Length: 211
Ligand code: Z5A
Image (cartoon, rainbow, N blue to C red):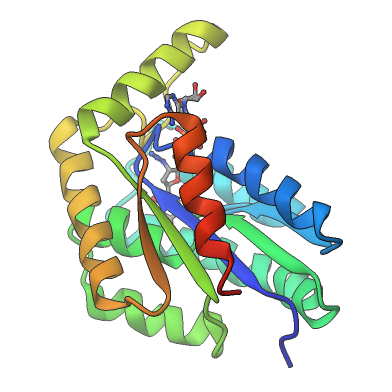
């Protein structure tokens, strides 16, 4: 059924996903490929509403399991109402985060049962897996500093439920991401995201050659 390619970008906060996605999209369009850029949680109006529920810091407690279910509800909507149709038309989909983020943030970061995450992934993906996942890896201190500097530059004062997490939380997330990538070497490529923007872009474009 699937004809286009499905590429996902992963990494801790401040890894540089947004920056890399711009490079990727430009390079693919220059080759005449129709590219759709999207993100998770989100990517459709309904999934963006679910994103707000997952990210906003409300007064009511949101358990790690409830957070996981919201991520997969948003993913189901996104796949059903956007991603599958685009791929079926031969378009390439570049997605900022996908299920590896649930494995890393909810599984590694929050301690949610990995078996539950894999069971939900099977139901929601229905056989669809990324053709390529680029994990932008860098030390947590570097990522958090970049994110802090960006917030300062844009005057952003309110942090979401993830931005306010501890450094230890992001260390667990990073190490889970690396575990996932090492267990799926055919799908995942680890990119050194601590390098300068040009070097990261070059490394990312080199990984595209195989596709
Ligand atoms: N989440 C989850 O828990 N479970 C799930 O299943 C899913 C998501 C799907 C929202 O994600 C949150 O949802 C996320 C995990 C959770 N929270 N966290 N953390 P998001 O992707 O929307 O938010 P984000 O990860 O916080 O995005 P970000 O901080 O914008 O990261 P980024 O896109 O990777 O970074 P960037 O904007 O490209 O770069 C950050 C800054 O660094 C910026 O000023 C750049 O100019 C600079 N930069 C970028 N590259 C470089 C290099 N190479 N050198 C120097 N400076 C650089």
